[in-house]
Amino acid sequence: MDFTPDETQREIAELAAGVLRRAGDDGEAAWRGLAGSGLLALSLPADLGGDGLGVAEVAAVLTETGRAAASVPALATLALGVLPLGRLGTPAQRATLLPDAAEGQAVLTAALHEPSAPLTARPATTAVPAGGAWRLTGVKTAVPYAATARRVLVPASVPGGNGIFLVDPDGEGVTLTATPTSAGGPEHTLRLDDAVVADEDMLDGPAAGEGLRVLHRYALAGAAAVGDGALAGALALTTTHLGTREQFGRPLATFQAVAQQIADVYIASRTVHLAATSAVWRLATGLDPDAELGIATYWLAQEAPAALAACHHLHGGIGLDITYPLHRYSSLVKDLVRGLGGVESRVDGVGELVGGA
Image 1 (cartoon, rainbow, N blue to C red):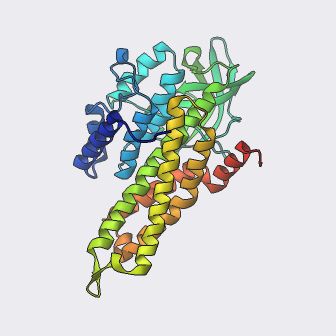
Image 2 (cartoon, one colour):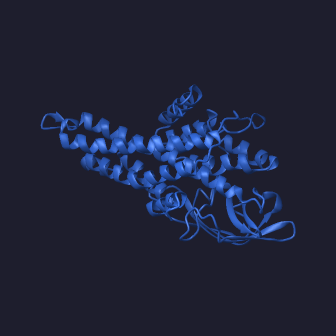
Image 3 (cartoon, rainbow, N blue to C red):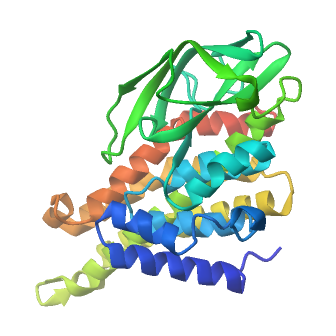
């Protein structure tokens, strides 16, 4: 297997990096730039104005948003919305939602978690048939960008299996409650009280249940890609600081203890990169990616927070300054790890895959 990015993927990464660099700290400008450069339309088919590319190319964009710690709804819209909708949606659903998302005019997201049940494969949220429609009841937690989303992909238990529904967050029977995040990005608890969803807004048939697995795979791959970029960005920021900051007439990087600590961060970053790249590659090539996704997200959850703590330590006082960008990386990683269910949830998932749990 060869994980070397091809020419298209390299150009996509370079274009995304340039857009984000020019936008600086302006999240709205960054989002407009990504849309205007066609980077939100990569996975759309040609008849909807896209490039017909796949998850590997989308992951390249997500990695760069992590590397810049950009405040944009890329993970939610692309990994939780555009990719699963492109795979599971009907032609009418795709034509209605994907072009606006690609132009940056619509945010999409998904409700993956329930109370004490992150990334649940057996939703407690239920959907009951109601004469050509469905009535949804349940609670979803930690839904990113729910208040501004055009639609939220909501998994629910249906007679005979699971289904995924396109829910209007402003619809009747839907209540949003804002919840705090480390990075300050918008997130809500979504409560459904007999919320009515039309039959044509159901993505996955109730008998198949394959849609929820597809949604989870894209979510995990997207989080791994963003985390890969975030850790690499924090490493680059820290190595630059250590190479230019002097004490006792010497750059900090020349002190042995400092070199050892930044080496540990480098090892964590490269391992997350390898695991994330392997998982995305398997997903893109149609191979079973579950073990690699489990390993990549476990390693991210286990190692990235400690690596970011080391970066803060190596920066000294400036690492605690709100005007210095390092806090954006550590806050982003905290939110990613929480969105994955934490270390325990990730290691439990890997254990189940290998038959040890």
